[in-house]
Image 1: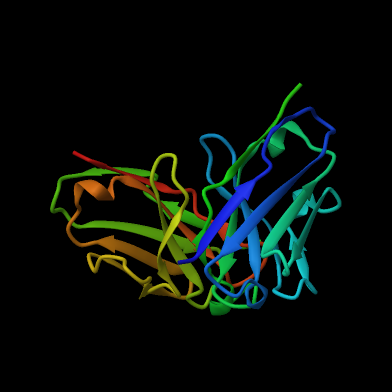
Image 2: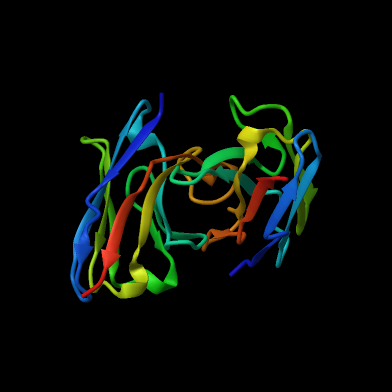
Length: 124
Length: 107
C-alpha cells in the first residue's frame, strides 16, 4: 500500500525558515517523481514544486522560486522541502504527492497518491 | 500558465440525482486532466486520470469525459458519502494548475 507522511509543519515568523519532510513507503521511491502542493486555509489547491526520481530535475512555481528548495534522499525514501524567507502568504497545508511514474507532466506525471498534509503557519 | 475554470462552485442535489461538473482549460491540455475528491480534513483523493480513466477502487458511478479544452465529471447517482469538494487539475504543462473546486452537498 502506497503511503506518504508529511512532517515538519510549525508556526514560524515571517522571514523564517523550516524544512518539511515526506516519508514514503509501499513503492520503489527512486522510480517516481514527487511533488508538493499547498492549500491555504479555506482556499483551493496550488502546485508548489516537483522533482524527478533521480533528483536531477527540479521545478517550482514562480512565487517560491529562490526561496524554496526541493530535494530527496532515495536511500531514506524521503523528499524534503526547504522553505526560506517565509511570508504570511505561504501559510498553508502542504501536501506531498507521488506521480504516476518518473515524470512531472503528461500521463506519467499525474499525481496518483497524496499524503495527509502538514500545516505551515507564518505569523508574528 | 494554463487557467482552469471550474463550474459550478457549489451545487446541492438529491440522493440518486445525476451531477455534472465542468472544467474549461485556457488552452488544449490533451486530456491530461485529473479529477480529485476532497472531504473536510482529508487529503485529496484522485478519482479519474487522463480525463476518463477511473482510478483503482473508485466506484463506477463516477465518470469523466471531454477533450481539448472542455472536460466534464459526472456522478450518475449521487450518494450521501459523495458530499465533498471536487477539483480538476491539468498536468499537460508546468505550472500544474487546479480548478477552483465544486462543493457538492445533499439537498
